[in-house]
Amino acid sequence: MADLQTLAQAIHGCTDCGLARSRTQAVPGEGAPQARLMFIGEGPGFNEDQQGRPFIGPAGQFLDELLGSIGLARPDVFITNMVKCRPPNNRDPFPGEMEACSKHLDAQIEAIKPKVIVPLGRHALAKWFPGESIGKVRAKPRRFGGLTLFPLYHPAAALHNGALRSTILEDFAKLGDLLRAPEPAEQPPRDEAAPGPAEPSPESHQISMF
Ligand code: SF4
Image (tube, rainbow, N blue to C red):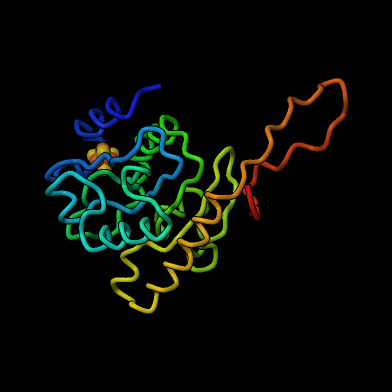
């Protein structure tokens, strides 16, 4: 398994989709190598493309405020995007671009092993729950495979619709509650000789707590 620095080098050199042609530089993401909390946005914007860092524009400033509201700061978490290179004119990333870039994100998740992944907005949500509405599933923890997902509105949504600002702050408070919830006891390995309960469905399901 590659470390984050090795992954970042691979991302900086990646030319696996058309976004490589228009970027100033790739933006791998940044934060704690063993972060408990990982945020995944859509893609770098103008400022991020210029400086090579994620979420440094107005949406990033709001994200900093949101982190502060639950007692966290950037060095406590890891922040990245679905695509690591800026889509021209800040258009939505194309499905093929997200598909091409997913290997980088998957490798980052494998390296960090976060306790909770926060998809920010519909594009990141669709990686795990395609076709679902962020407005309906936001701020509810869900399990997918071995991951815990806690989808939230993208902070930029509050820049376009000021009424969402208080909603996003309330959702973040729920995220803080989730992080403070006690870890579940480790399940002992099942005795193969003894019939146990049926395996959980591989399909995602909603959970109320850890
Ligand atoms: S967006 Fe991802 S797949 Fe496309 S060139 Fe950048 S790093 Fe590579």
